Image (cartoon, rainbow, N blue to C red; front, side):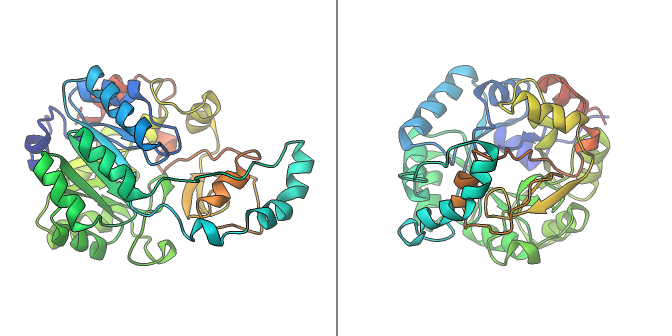
Length: 332
């Protein structure tokens, strides 16, 4: 059986309506994004941690590696509190016993901790990638208008139906409906993430019924059975994260890839790693005090690495090639 041609397939000229999820924090790689795009899916690169100059260079490098559509992802919301209001020294002092116990030096105060979304979006639009996806909000109308003028396809991400409607009303080209099974951050923007935990099975058909834009199903999709189920729910493409993160081409560490295929089979939602609610493999790491995002991520980086993973991590096959995975996903 072949997956149907959909509006997403036509819009992006895909052979396979499968999107490799964009990974933030340095987990994306040029090799993975290009491999998926060249094989007929949509490769993605999470770029919210880059400077404008690095973002421009990344888009140039992706264009050199593939002549097909690829996606670059940014975060609309980059700080939970303004940098000037956060007491870095006090936060380091609270964690000093953990640094001392681990035998590591506390991290130095970062400047700047992240680039503003508008600054990165401007650099992205100037470079004109084929696809621009975003999470944690809806960009200003002027940014979306500039994308249309530049011929850039826009993809917003929602974790509730209300968020999907907001994106649809803003005129995005497609909407990712991300169920709470997904690994990584819970990217809610209208209500707190803990109040926005809707499963993929419930979220996708409700979103399909509520919006005009094509819907891309995400969250807990790691094999062909789940891909087929997503299309049965009305999705016109799927976005797959954890399974691609475990492939040889991703920038995940060997320990992270090993944990995805051979580690604990359960995941949990926690703010301990970054200050924002996110799903990772179960860990013994505990922290009573959680600083706001992104400062928590910087403070804990010397202490622990988060092994981001969705609830379908037990279905991940070890040491798999990304193109082989793509072909397995569409063999329905």
